[in-house]
Image (tube, rainbow, N blue to C red; front, top):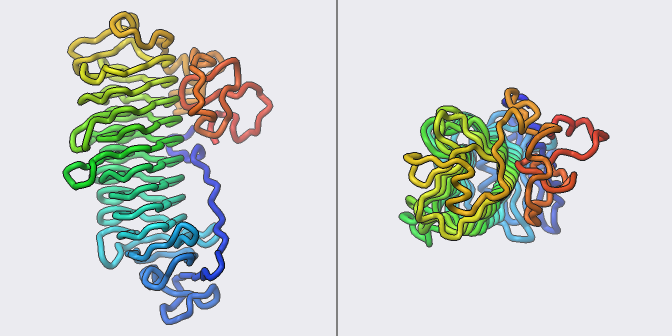
Length: 430
């Protein structure tokens, strides 16, 4: 797989069917805000569209460069407001919206979809959505924004799907903050960000209960993040959530972290299933669990580290209660004290009774071609059929059904059982 390939995040974009009473509007660079906003007589600016729409309206935007938009109007559950690219065209937001230093800003605007925009080089965030619920951000491409690709706050029932969030200058690719519950972060490609790839933070100091609960983080490709700190997937005050089928590689801090700094409580009660995590030689630990983050479950993961002495797991003593782990492919390095004492897998098993069916394995043995960032499983991989059967992970990162062989494979990719497959999947990537 090419380092900058996004094939594994191929999208099936939703087709929106207008409801009774809804209006289809259009925006184009040759339009005029004095026009009626029809396809043949479009508006010129996104902000005029944002000031004009109501529940059920769809705004289709033609290719070209635009000033961003600030939206305060909500749709409803049956009549969402949709801003989307027209067909296969690619509209670009090349200037901040008139109110905040962001490209697209949803301020208290619920039941809204933003889909198919390129938003690069904005002064703060590519897309910002706060004090809202049931927002969908799908298929947008954000690169080189000053602070974040996507920032959300106090936003329940959020869907962030199939976006590219790259090269954020100060912080994270995707930042879900302020105790917004039930976010779904799915199928995104996130790379080159200064801090975390995905950061979820309950932000107890900002009000609310400080807890993000019921999150689903799945099928994301996350790499080359964290030179300024953070993790591929960073969780502060995240509880009762599932993190599955993510590919995380070449991370310069930690792979996945569960902890509490500003969250309203420890990151407890989470399930980490079938992730492939590889930390770079300048990174920390593949899995980092701290600050009384208890009752977490770790199954079917690949946890590897290119560092000279760090390894698969750093878990604090106060996070061990209720911790269960098994059927993982790991290094021979575990610690409960930040690396001052390092245990082999056998010593870890004896000390804790965990990982009794886990195996020590290297990228060369596990993957088709790790040197080329192809993390599909080789035909002789020790991860084949070595996982635990998990009802919560019925498919792999590209939608292949599990299991294909005699059992679940370990890691994000399930190797297909036959060679008679669609060529699009032959290298393990979509």
